[in-house]
Length: 89
Image (tube, one colour):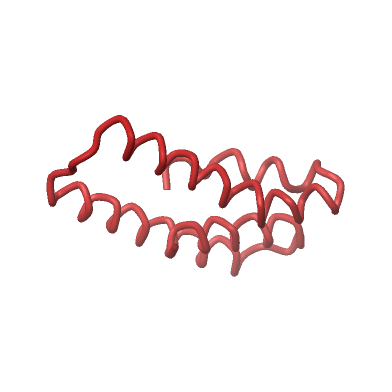
């Protein structure tokens, strides 16, 4: 949720093929890299961190759904849909 603000601004200015890559490969690779680094550095997590991640994922999914329903620009719609998909992953 708090890391989503750059995406709806980057999609409309990117060429269409790059916009598709941002939605698919780039976002998932960034999330995978963040998870790998965090798990390797920290190791064992307290139980409430999972609840915190769940809350942020829920907020991100609801935010992405609500903002994508209001969009008329197709690339911004794709960006907010990607925010929703990352939040619900």
